[in-house]
Amino acid sequence: MSINKSFEEFIKGIPKAELHLHIEGTLEPELMFEIARRNNFEIKHKSVQALRDAYNFNNLQEFLDIYYEGASVLITEQDFYDMTWAYIEKAHSQNVLHAEIFFDPQTHTSRGISFDTVINGIHKALDDAKEKFGITTKLIPCFLRDLDANAAMETLNQACAYKNWITAFGLDSAEVGNPPSKFKDVFDAVREKGFLTVAHAGEEGPAEYVWEVINLLKVSRVDHGNHSLGDTTLVEYLSENKIPLTVCPISNLKLKVVSDLKDHPLRKMLQKGLHITLNSDDPAYFGGYVNENYLALAESIGLTKEEVCQLAKYSFEATFLTDEEKELLIKKVDEFYKKNL
Ligand code: ADE
Ligand code: ZN
Image 1 (cartoon, helix red, strand yellow):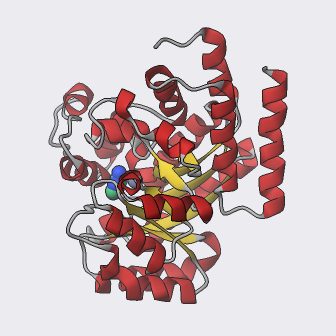
Image 2 (cartoon, rainbow, N blue to C red; image 1 turned 60 degrees about the vertical axis):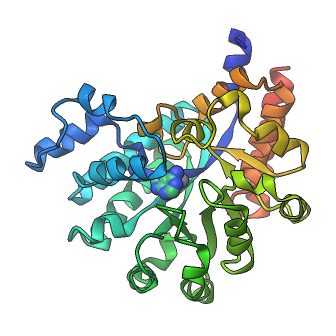
């Protein structure tokens, strides 16, 4: 299904939030090579093109292997700043007014890079985002679920020195075989310290993992959540309690969570009353930022202007902003809609 130019401009122009974005997943090959060069770090692949050619994944693990390898070029605070700033410029160009950004501290601390280096570089770029573009952000460190709970607890302790910069904690990496229950005590500690929680669940793992992140980790949002649809009671629960799912269509296609975007469950999710937000996950690896995710769905399953508007409003409703801040942003969506009917 092709979409006309004016609808394309409507999608690109509508104000939106991004709530599922791994900052390490925004590291484009060109910047990766530039950072590697200045750090005297040798990348296995010989060129930007060779690297891009390797971005073919049959599942989450195949992607994670390349993604962690890519992140290993990041060494100095400036590296983390440059990666984050490149994303902010992209977000600004796509009318993202607010972003809640994941990062993976353990990917770096396990290589001897200090937590301080990582968060200082990212945070400085987010400060500049507010000052230069008026983009607001929240920061969400994620625990790697294929590592053990003690390592996660240690990361939580390191992060506590930066309490004012952190809103919530998340859970990511290899899902199957690493159930959320493994991190119940860590997430109890996270909430005791006053942070909110989110977690990846139901991307490759079963609906049971989605129940676990709700009941044990007490998440405010579920990241992905695709496999929730197989459990009617769960779908009703998510809908009744307005628990948002941060869905990432192009990621789902590239990691073979769906075999064709025409089969993407987004329409079914919306029909069931789920609060869905559209996001890009790891755009440098999957070939699309947030606007491309909206456009890809519009082209594959067909979206109306009203549905695009609803998705943009859900994206702001699902943020960790205050009710007043959310209202202001939702009003911007309504104004945009009225002007572009
Ligand atoms: N880390 C980065 N992207 C991820 C994804 N889609 N699922 C789990 N962990 C991730
Ligand atoms: Zn993700």
